[in-house]
Amino acid sequence: MIGWTIAVLASVSAPSIGAADRAAIAARIADFDAMMRQGRIADSIDFLPPRLLRMIAQRFGVPDADVKAMIGAQMADAVADVRFLSFGMDMQAARVAATPDRQRAYMLIPTHSMIAVPDVGTLRSQTSTLALQDDGLWYLVRIDSTQQVALLRAAYPEFTGIDFPSGSSTMVDDTDPTPP
Image (cartoon, rainbow, N blue to C red; front, side, top):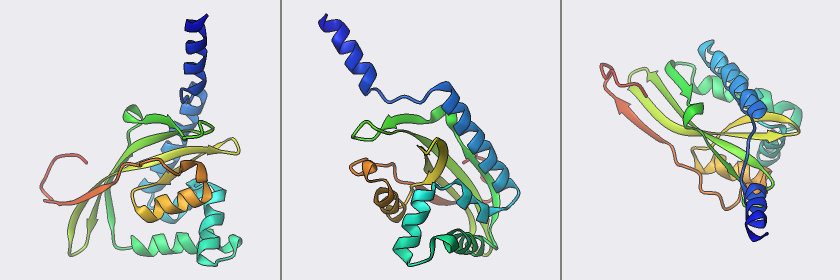
């Protein structure tokens, strides 16, 4: 009886993302990858959960209806002269976990990119992308800066107390054949 109770408790507390949800996350990643390859950086806003967008609008005093256009324009301006050399999310190396209250399973997906910045060089970044489900849909949230994590926690307090991996960026020699 004790063994059965422990097994039941372990299965209740273990974070889980089933096959259908993994397929949904993979489809979102494929859509995101296509958007990046097409240079539609401003459209990356469509991968953020509405609750996070509302938090950003509130934090910066922007009407909810205007936040997507505002952030999209800022992102497009920030990368206007940048050339994306490579980008990818590694689902095989993704880690599934749950929030401390065990109410929300999520996935941390290692993410890499390499960009060419005019008059500066090539920048290789290693970050993580958070996949979280809200209202039945999976969203992708970049979490490699303290500001991004703070906004996430303001919108989703259940992520408070989780240590997210920090991202890293390094300048590389343009002739370096090593992938990101």
